[in-house]
Length: 434
Image (cartoon, rainbow, N blue to C red; front, side, top):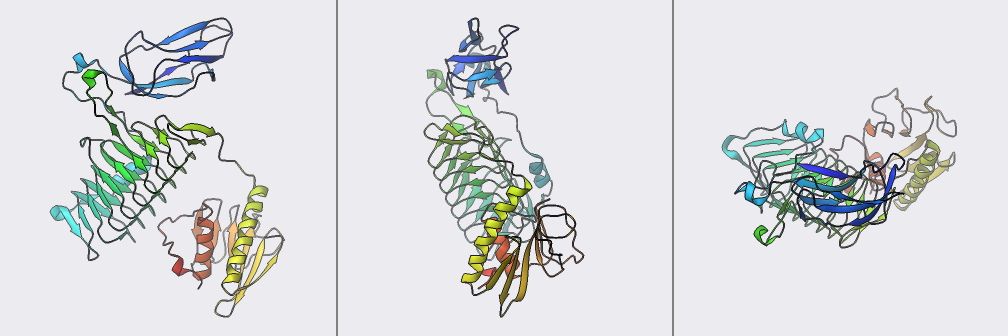
């Protein structure tokens, strides 16, 4: 199983050490006593040695980095030497799946006959299957796995062909046209593709599910990206590595177009992989990486905004939205410095959108909230009328009745990365204002 070689404590006075040298790279085999890195304290330099036989999965630091004692320096997978392993397969890393993976898997029920087909030309082959409400399968879709779960609102585009041990697609998630998943490298108990709620695998992505590919909630894999869970060709008897490992993409992450993600890589929450990069090492949460091989170019991508800053951002979005409405023939009047918009059109009548920033049910300009308003709230708000359209940023839920104007606003917020549950929602722009 994966383990870490960590920065040691060399003396009682130094809590930080400097990485003086790295003597291994991803894919290298190591044996007990082999020096993998050299670190430097205020008093001396010291080698760091491997304690077990294994293969380097990731080098987590660079020469010159200043690291805390106990911080991981290298990740490796313990393996027996080849003369002890005999003909056994190399070990698969333990699964690190989020809870929603099991939640989806538990929905599956036996599929009579082992297959299902649709009028549009889709075909499913599975022993266990669950299709949620509002699932959309386009023509030419072919899914084959022991267990297939497509949660409410999941969407599979035309000519998508997926073959895996498990295919688990979360609520409102989408796999776009001409994507492929295959089992080259051999099927194992860990063979699965799991796509989290409201996430996207874009057109023509290529996925190898010899091991697990798990993509978290509200994350995106861009067009023509390639994710691999195995890497082998030359003989291990000639000293070449044969690598197998899960690929884990965290929540709110974004992998750019044309990227290659290699076996065993974890991409942290909120991170960005720039287009056409090749990722060979783990990507820390909230970082941007780019290049071949990918290197960190930015840290701390996400920021915690206070309510005042969020109001400023939302006011800018609503200003853009008002321009969009004017282009569609609406008369829009703003009041309260972006807190409220009055919208009029012959077929709509008079509507109002209000940004609620106070818990007591008044807007930033002290306008009292009435039932017919469309509300965006930062703090908890419970309308008197349960059908009142309400975008709650407190719990990221949409409540109430949806019409063309509400739909138009929801799509605008989505295009700024602001999503609301239920994720099982049809984002077709034709449902908006004409």
